[in-house]
Each structure stands twice: as structure tokens, then as C-alpha cells.
Length: 235
Image (cartoon, one colour):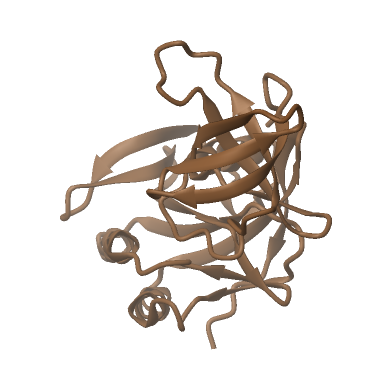
């Protein structure tokens, strides 16, 4: 996925009220940008970090700038926009990057399903095989080469795991796919210290037949692309 307009570089002053961030641009101006990420952004919102913003050029938006990328560690760029994950994964499926999800005729997005009033990110369908329900989680947190999710307690994430297990019980295929928008990782672990309930439930649904896969991405101010799988380790 390439950004349709050049991103604007700046320095993070602070993130606050969850969806807002003040940024000093290279020309000295200070702007308030929308932060498209509902998590804690642990490790990705330190004041003084280099960030990149997208100017939506939408006069109807109160905050036309959108925060897209942060340099979390020296030379390590992280995509913080959770809304891009579905686009990135669908693009990677179409290009054959995600081998586990090949061989389906059609992909549908944001379809209502399950017993808890959920929307599945993707449904892959083919006349010769059961439907495949794919729930995508954006991952920004990493420590010592390990990608971690979630970065905050997520009751919604646990609900999605339960829904996936229900689909398996009904004879469908279910996949939880962790889209890691950074390249400095070699393995994925559930963040048990942050949300032990999510980690416990993830292990339970995997044992019940839900597939867990993770892919990392190369991130740059020009674009973001899913590149390679990393193992999911749930010891």
C-alpha cells in the first residue's frame, strides 16, 4: 500500500485524549493530529519521537492531519494506524504473500456474524470449501524482537476470539491474524502481562481449532507492505 500523498515529518510533543497528538512540523508549526489507534500505543508515543503525518486535505475534518508512522526505535518505523490493517492484509492475500489464505474465490469485508453482534474483518469464500472467517489485529508493541498483543486490556478482542471459536464449532474455518506493522520482530507472543485473560483465551481457542498466524510489514513514509510470516508462540 502506497500513501497517495507524501507524508509530513515532525516531532511528537504528546499524545492525549486517546485520539489526539500535538506535533511540531519541520517548518516550526505546531499542529494537532488525529491518532487512528485505540490502544495504549505503548512504546510508540514517547514525546520527542519522530513521526509522519498524512494531510487528508479534508476541509470538513476538525483535525485534517492523521498520524500514520512513528520511529519507535532508531531506524525502526511503526505504522500506528489500526484502520490500515484490513487493507494491508487484503492486499497481501491478493498478491499471494499470505500463503495460508490462498485458494478462495471471493473476499468480503466487514460482515456481521456470530452471537455477540460482531463484524468479521474478512470472509473468504469458495464453492468447494468451508467459508474462512478472518479477524485481523494490528500490532505495534514489540520488545526484544517479540511482537506483542494487546497493548492494553481488550474485552472487544476477547469477544472476537469467542466468535471465532463459535464459527469453528459450526464447521467453518476461523483465523486470528496479527498484522505487525514493524519489521524488527521474529516471533509473536500474547502480551500476558498486559491482559492475561486475552492470552488465556487465545490459547483456548487455538486448542479448539482457531488458527493463529502473524505477519510483519515493512514500513516507510512512502508506503507499508506485509512481507513475511513470523511464528505465533503461545507457551
